[in-house]
Length: 120
Length: 287
Image 1 (tube, rainbow over the protein chains, first blue to last red):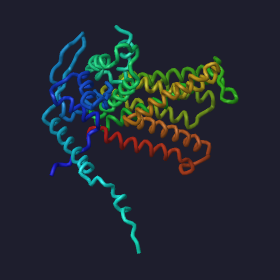
Image 2 (image 1 turned 120 degrees about the vertical axis):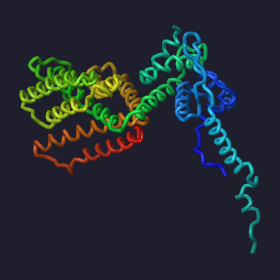
Image 3 (image 1 turned 135 degrees about the vertical axis):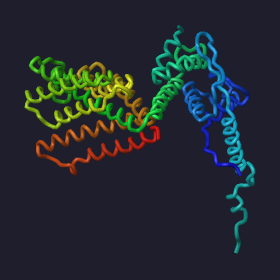
Image 4 (image 1 turned 30 degrees about the vertical axis):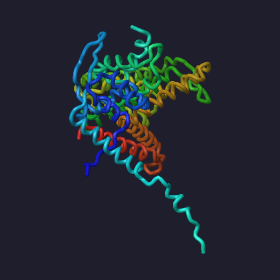
């Protein structure tokens, strides 16, 4: 039995998943999230930083390094242990939810009921 | 600075100044990297996400303040919006001639100098709130109250409006503090809301701009609705503003001997809106 978890929004899930392989900076997170979601999740810059603020406040993400590239600050973010645990809990929740469908009998219930017309 | 950078940089204005100082360049760097190289303008979805992200960052500031401080600042904003519109009302009596059918014609009535003085002094008192020096504000508010009273007496109009304005000027002094002042951005919000009320009437006086007026109003309305949806403070401020104008109308009616508390539901509707917004503000404040 797993502790109940609150469903994560898809962009948040993919921001955390993008950081699984190691710390990344803002643009690299956007590219990685797009790559691992097969192009489905294309994070806008504003959405990314709102998610990073929320995840940092929750202790799921932390600032790892800060570089100056081309006169601009480039910060890299990494997953914390709590973030990694939250990501795995969410993945487990989704896989359990998916199993309800994938392991259900393939024959639709309605057609089973319609199979044999009752005769008097 | 490239064209795309020059056009993207103003989008950062959606964020609070302190946030911008800390992360503005980082966000801009990411935005420029994420924008396709041939583009001269930022993507529409980036514009939308930065606007919403900025509003969320503003709302996040609430969580660092107590409910009492947040409520005081929003009450200040509501009173400032009311007084801003009252100042415009005085200035309009000097500079605008209302025609039948709602059309305004620019004019100048030199005999209405008390109204002009009252309008300018009330506007100055509202702006002094942002400076945070209470003695200066008290002096400004006193001068504005004297000018408004003189204008009221000279027009023989001592109704609910004047009494409410005097009470609001007193509230401005009582609510203002040297520390925990409203940010300068809020002065723009107050000016924007006052402009949203004035602009449609001004556009009616300039008939060659029929399309810009609704577009501008729609833009102001959409930004305001998005802000209200994310941050409870403007909702509380608008609730307080409606409560003030409802009470002012009620007071005016009471002076003339018409209407009563139960025949005018506007006060209760305004109070209910302010209460719901206040409940949301409590959830956004430090517990």
